[in-house]
Length: 243
Length: 197
Image 1 (cartoon, rainbow over the protein chains, first blue to last red):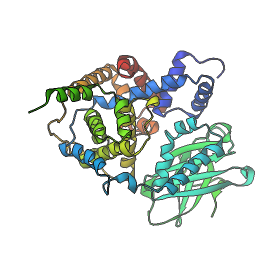
Image 2 (cartoon, each protein chain N blue to C red):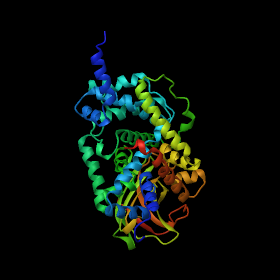
Image 3 (cartoon, one colour):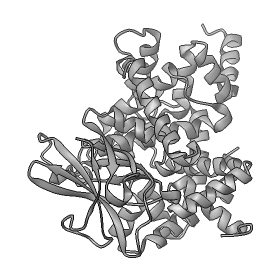
């Protein structure tokens, strides 16, 4: 899209950003607009505030009376009851932060857009903190040997975060699909979107019911298939996880 | 006997301190500031937790987690938005993470309604009035929205559903879901602008 967007289109993009529902082209367009007009962030914040007002419309239900005293007492005597201290150690926090930073840097993605694509970088942190999260390094094969990236599989939450680069855009009617090899089965995880410049940063839901959570995923595969509901990985395998 | 001067001073102080002043007092280690913030927003955080989690015990735990987070962590940045908005964003995001981590097979709706607390409010008349006024204002604004705009907005916000999941559930095109949600949000801006400064 060339020239300045209409005010209506700009509003749509801002609302889509706040709601986390921009498509990849729209996200790219909005990223450029934000770089050109950083003051847009104020209007974005206002829309975020509007969205944050929604819970005021809920039926008013009072919390139990003992909750207030439990909270105030907990901070007066910050001993064993402090749940925050049970959270991951600073070392783990640093690891998570640096993984997030590496994701952003490796893909050359502005952090602002990173937050858009994943709704929030906290998504990544949350996913990584789950005990059933597995990080796979993944490499291209054949024609796309330079493609590389990582996939985070969060089995507990049935989500996968896919971060890849140097991926060619698929032809019309085709799409990239992620598959997990579990035991002797190859399970279809889902289709993901290609962003601009051959980069992928997408979070998809994976079919939790298909996994036996006691069996390890031995390998991840990425194939190019019809965008319509493939049952099996039929075409050439484009990328595989390192074993 | 109550010292009326002391009482009046504290009452005025209680009512007039802004959220930012209270947050700074909180960072300075004053537990009473957390109590006042809880009085202002406890109902909002608990109500939202209950709406998403549909379980009163989990809502209680999450409310406690959110306020203790405010005390122990320094994540809120007043230049980026209101405290109220920060609390609702954090509560919603944590609550949705929790329902996702429960797995996909639980039937949450069955639990809805069984766990609603009906305890009487411990809030002062001032807090009740401020909360009621805001609530009324947001309800009126939502009531002005076309029903389908409101529906997709609420499905995305409270159920944490993706746009494609909503499209599937309502059997409408994905583009339509996006447009309705965006237009719904934009249409709320004007009637609610007095509340977002």
